[in-house]
Length: 201
Image (cartoon, rainbow, N blue to C red):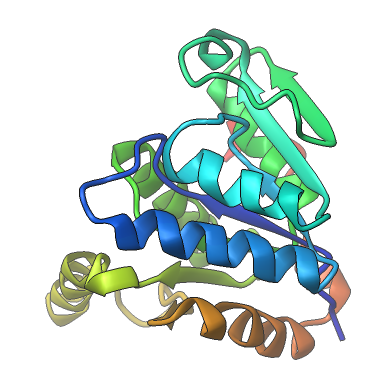
């Protein structure tokens, strides 16, 4: 049985146009802190990214930021984090975030958020890890992506042997219970990436 100790959150470095996105991020940061679960995030203090981290900090949670050197100024690195890890590049950032986390959650965000989410799904699809991956479908933000995945399945680009388990939560309150249920059924040794370096994938 596997236990979730830290959750990696992928999300936008901007706030988006709907206040519900930032509200959801702050609510989730609070939930993580109150349940003693650490937050692993992109290290910036702006947008939804900053909101989830700041909320976790305000409620006494453990916060670990991982940011590449070239984004320290651009995304205003959050110095208040318990641990701010600065990496040489994006690849090492993603490797470190993977190593630190027991599960992954995608809140609303842009291309970067989508890329991080899809990369984790690809690794899972190829059998490189089985850590839980969840999309927080705030205000149905991820519905277009879910429709695209259904389209890919219909055309058999996602076919037998290439399935992946993407969890979905429509409310922030549902995120942690769904991650915990998925992790509980997972042997500890099946969470780890089966390769030493992201670059080898």
